[in-house]
Image 1 (cartoon, helix red, strand yellow):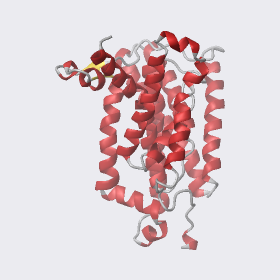
Image 2 (cartoon, one colour):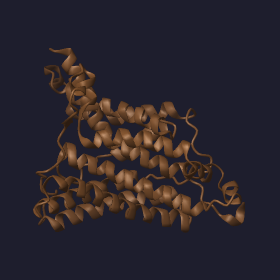
Image 3 (spheres, helix red, strand yellow):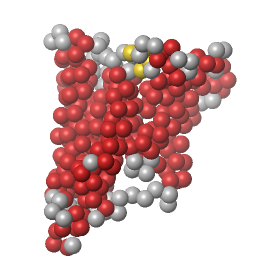
Image 4 (cartoon, rainbow, N blue to C red):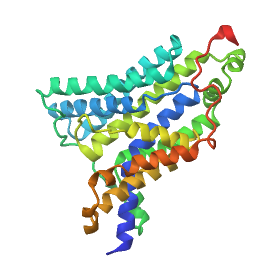
Amino acid sequence: MDWVTTLGQIMNTTLVFSTALVFAALGGIFSERSGVTNIGIEGLMVFGAFSTGVASHYAEVAGMGAASPYIGILAAIVVGILASLIHAVASITFKADQIISGIVINFLAAGSTLYLVKLIFNGAGETERLKEAFTKYAIPGLSKIPIIGEGLFNNYPTTYIAIIVVFLSYYILFKTPFGLRLRAVGEHPSAADTMGINVKRMRYIGVMISGALAAVGGATVTLTTTSTFAHNTISGQGYIAIAALIFGKWNPIGAFGAAAFFGFSQAIRSYVTLFDWSSHIPSEFIYMVPYVLTIIVLAAAVGRSSAPAALGTAYDPGKR
């Protein structure tokens, strides 16, 4: 066995599986840094995966060719923002319980997308397989570097974009006035209000960014690993993304590291099945590894991660 090649492939598979988690975790960070708990990340990913599958399919039918995946991503962003507004209106304007509102988003996404995909595709339980889904792009020169070349520089376009968005998100949150205002309304909204910051508007923006990024995470799954959308396309990855942002301490760089850890667990799961001895292990045990690790990581993170002080608390200007 060529261990250099194998290590490069494992690194590559890790990034493939973690890309969707990175987008979704970053989305969760923007929402929760503004003080709005977003349990609906799972549902927003489902909406994104569904809208991408449908929009990309019809873009292919219209003869748009290689542009169809990007049209699918744009559709996911629009749908993700619109879906996140449901959560924003309920939790910010009407001050509903943010956990319940997020759970409603998850149920709404699961039910509505399954109904719509059957309606659109004549009773089929999934969209038609995309012919123009993303393929891996090797960066000339860099992709020839041992291990790192195969692992890092021979990836899907969405993976490269995700890495850029990680550093861009860090810069926006911690190096710009907008980021300072967003974090302020999540830490001490009454003080931010006193300083002239519109708390509701900032929280709306945070939740809408969350919807857009989480939906792109769902779109990534459709456009890379499955090439289609079905009811089990996301399969709990939104919840893993929430665990990643908590373990990453609501920091984009930390969330990326946590997402890579969960992606690595899925990559190892895939490679274990290649060995003969894996046939003696029930497949259910192998497939539940990432979720077991999620529980372990969350248990380890309790008491060590400090959430934004006003997270989950509706702001009432009359009760400063």
